[in-house]
Image (cartoon, rainbow, N blue to C red; front, side, top):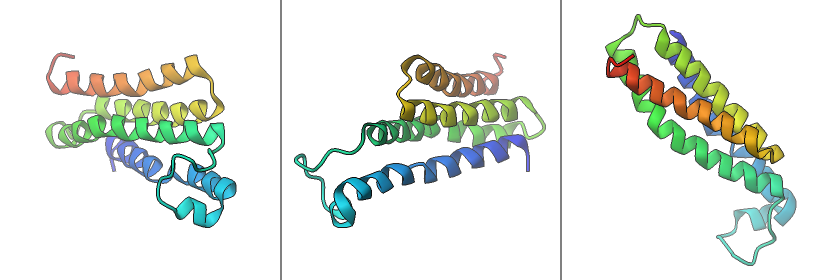
Length: 132
């Protein structure tokens, strides 16, 4: 497995699992049936960190929608190139750091971590286009 495949897979796995903490908080705050209920604007609000975790998860999904197809294309078009693997690693580090930092509510570092992930996608696209 190449670094590109490894870190893209880790990113997908991370995004597939990082909803668990905020759902567990929802169960703790609202009870099991409250957590399973339909959306209710009058429901007991979740903890602040869990609300941030939910937003961070949404951002990670949106970022992966851009990165994922580029990673597949790079895997097909340039299987022996190591640069896409480095970008996949920085993307993974960026989205994991973004989630954790966002949960703690640290605004500037959160934005920098997101920028790392986002610029990894931009770098991969530019590399695929042969511009770098």
